[in-house]
Amino acid sequence: MSRFASRLLTLACAAALVGGQAAAQLLPSIGLPPPAAVGGGLPVGNAPVVGPVLQNVLTPQMRQQVISPTLNSVSGLPETVIESGAASLRDLRRMRQQQLIRDHRDQLESDGDGQPVRRGVLVTINPSPAALRTLAGAGFRPIGGEPNSDLGLTIVHLSIPKGMSAREALKTLRKIAPEVEADYDHVYEPAGGDLLPVAGALAAGTAAGGGLRIGIIDGGVASHPSMAGAKIEQHGFSGQPQATGHGTAVASLLVGNQGVFRGAAPGASLFVADVYGGNRAAGSASAIVRALGWLVSKQPRVINISLVGPSNLLIARAVQQVRARGVQIVAAVGNDGPAAPPQYPASYPGVLAVTGVDAKGRALLEAGKAAHLDFAAPGADMAAALPGQGYARVRGTSFAAPFATARLAIVGSNRLVAEARPGKGRVGRGILCFDCRIDPKAVGAK
Image (cartoon, rainbow, N blue to C red):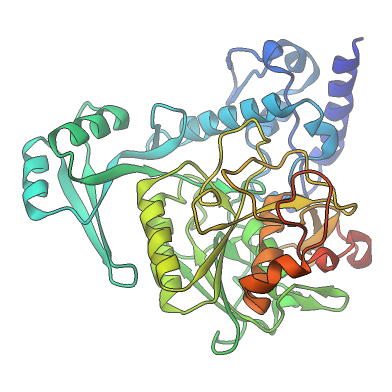
């Protein structure tokens, strides 16, 4: 057996051991072989075959985990998986997006570059009545306008003419109305694992009010003893808020406080904008912009976005408006490796882009490569809250971002560089909140 095949077999066995645990457990994804060994994505049940070597080693259930890991997972990829190479991470990202589109064909399609977008819809920014009349004459019908006074933007959704793909429609729109600012309604994903709603109540907390205010855009936050006394307010932008593992973990790293477990900003008021509503096909650009508008109205000092996706004109304009109102934004760079395209919103100017490091201060191998990198923070060898009770081992840039958010909110941007400590690898201007990590053993993390 080759060394590479032996490594895959080891990974497969590890996945099998984890696979029988409860849904709230952390199921790591399986790494892909180098590009030469990646197959054509032929379907096996609901999951594509990812290559001849993996096909021989992995069970159908494990193949499904490669493309769509446990939906309540809050873990990133372990280092043993990352060793398969940056190109494998890039390919895994591509196949994950393809599977998401396949699973939600009624809601999603591709933008032509493999990025999932809302099916049959384009979004425009502040279109004039004359432009809308021109577009209506060509079959682009307005299906809703959303004035956002907090951001000074009006978003108008247009239905795509029958028989056109989103790519064809955007090209046509730009030809007949080049003055209109328009784009796809891209779908964004968590930068630390997939998510679905979990059984259990939302974190209620006490009414969020004065003092230090922090916003997050994520999935909903579940109740947990560490946040029983926290000041949390939640609002949904894709239906009612739904508790998720990802949102719960991120929130606990900010405001959690139970025994030895302590978030980086306990006592802060936390405003949670859920852009998923329990639907993996949600998290659209327009939902994120609505969330940004709501959060700005709550006057937070910083907004944490542990989500990643492509550049989008709508989100770019919204980010500009948020920054113009004096609100800082922190975003994770993603976990698809340095070979993947730069992820957004972390790559936008004015957004604090954050990567993760392990307990030894080493940059995570799977961390993405943003257009710019500002800081690092703990993103591995640490614990975060699980929905309901207990703690989980978490890994990924999703979980580094809230530490940087907390420090930015507490000390301001001028003092961040002074308190950052050196690290190994790509860590930007240094590591923030290095001592904020909670050892998983200290809280019995699973």
